[in-house]
Length: 388
Image (tube, rainbow, N blue to C red; front, side, top):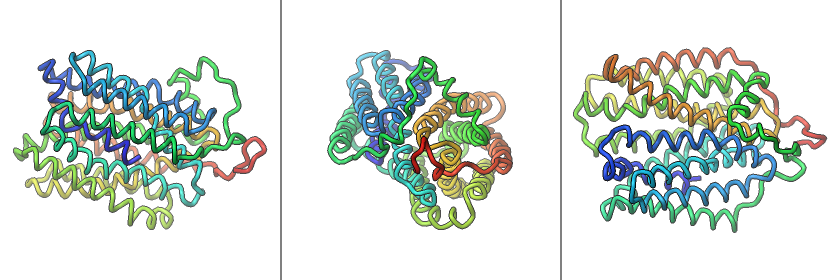
């Protein structure tokens, strides 16, 4: 997972500059990430369903191969449509992180879920430290080099997965229902999960959280530049500080605090705390205070992600975990389209920095929705006559 995230984040420092070689339009730069998110939305639930039916390992290997192909196409470039094609292929095959989450669910005891799901957040935080740094280094040779390196790293991940990764979902725990046409419709998968008792509210929480979080992330660098005249290296430092905060929180605090306070209580206070620190960044009179607010907000984020994943998994049976986490990924992709679009509009037409306080209000509402959720199922429940 860490190698996968490094591959993703290697492109962050150079992707806009690569696009600007073919178009001066800001829309073209945005389109690269939107196309990726739309591809992920369409395919993630299907790959999750395939993981439930055929096992996690083949889906992981297929997804990584597709990711590698997407990176290499993007690196070779030659025209804007080629770049878009590369990111679309990457988005369609980006079910590997959701499938990896399902893998973790398969091999985790109930009391270990939140701690183990925090590994995903740790991988992201370490990737946010290592990936952009390596992208900046290789970008000194050529703008395309980080994309080629990302493709090679992902191919190496395929080799490692093929030789050392065992299957986590035993045949007697797999989904035995035949695939139907509706299984390929992401909206059908989402609606099917929303109807499950208690799960709809948790998915709503995840959607609202993703909407606010992605919108703020998409405009925070612009806000720092316009308010504090922040330079590129200062923004990089801010990103690295956030990654360090997430890593330390997942390593030392999540395993201790979540078992003590419970997933729902931790999630509620994490959402409230994140909203508070976003407001503090909006009102910060000095750049270093905004850096502190961002680092503390990242600490809150580190609690929220694994907690919401655990609360979701507790509301489905083991053979549905892959489909659920694919649905989670699809919802996250949609929020990665709508959140930044909304944030950009209110930033331009309402006031600079408005995504911070509007996002905070959404997070406070999200905390209330989570507070009202009902307890979930236990993954210890029998499934098709087999004790999980």
